[in-house]
Amino acid sequence: MNNQSTRFTIFVCIIAVPVVLVIIPIANFFLMSFWKMESNQIVESASFGNYLYFFSSPAYWGTFLSTLYLCLKVSAIGVLVGYPVAYFVWKRKGRVKYLLILLLILPLFMSYIVKIYTMRTILDLSGILNKLLVAFHILEEPSRQFIYNQTAILITMAVIFLPFVILPIFLSLERIPKNLVTASSDLGAGTLTTLRYVILPLSLPGTVSGALFTFVLALGDFVTPQMVGGPNGFTFGRVIWSQFGLAYNWPLGAALAVILFATALMTIIAAGWASQQRKV
Image 1 (spheres, rainbow, N blue to C red):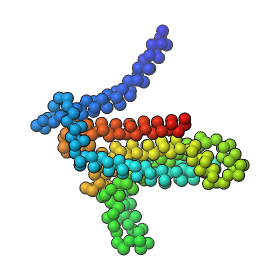
Image 2 (image 1 turned 45 degrees about the vertical axis):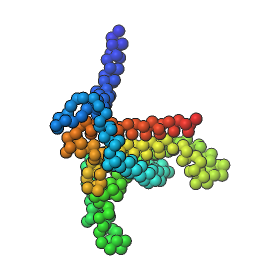
Image 3 (image 1 turned 30 degrees about the horizontal axis):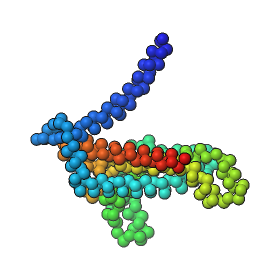
C-alpha cells in the first residue's frame, strides 16, 4: 500500500509540473484573448473582438505573413548550411567527430544576448563583415545593408539557430546502420548515389526536426528583431511584445500570442502527419 501511495504521489508530481508551468499559462492566455480594453482597463467580458481585429487588419496580416516567410527562409538556410556541416562531422573518425560536434553546439550554452551582440559587431557599419568586403574591394565603402533591416534579422537568426539544425541532423546520421552504407558501396554505388538514395532518406527525420526547431524558435523571437532589426525589422513577435509593453493591450497581445502558438502547433502537427504518411 505504501508503494502504491508513493507511486501515486510521484505520478501526481510529474503531471503537476507541466500543468502548472505550461498548460495553465497557455489556458490563461487563451482566456485573456477574449477580454477587451476599455478606458485603459482590462474588462473580463467575453468577445471575439481581438481576433476579428486581427483578421480585419491588413497591417497585422502583412506582418504575420512576412514573419512566416522570414522564418521559412531561416529554416531553409539552416538546412542548406547545417546538413553539409553535420555530414562533414559525421564522416570524421574517432574522437575528432565528437570534439567537432561539441564545438558546434557550444553556442547553445552561451547567453542569447551575448550572441546577438556578437552578431551586431559583425554586421554593423564598422563591423568585421563590412571591413572584409571593403578590404577585398567587393564594396567601395561600408554598407548599411547588413544592419537594422530584415536582412540583418535573417542573417542573425540563421547563425544563432544553426546549432539547432546541425545537432538533430548529426544524431539522425549517427543512427544510420553502417552496414547499409557499406552494402551500397559494395553494390557499386558511388558516394553521391549512396548519399542520395541511402543517407538522405534515412536522415530526413533529423532534417525535418532541425527545420521545425528553427522555424518555431524564429517564429516567436522578438529579441533579435529588436536588437538588429531597427525600425525596418518589425516582426510578429515584436508586435506581440509591444502589446504587452508600450501599448498595454494585454487582451490583444494574448490573442496574437494564441494565433502564433496555434500556427506553430499546426506546423508541428502537419510535419508529423507528413512524416507518418511517408512511412506508410
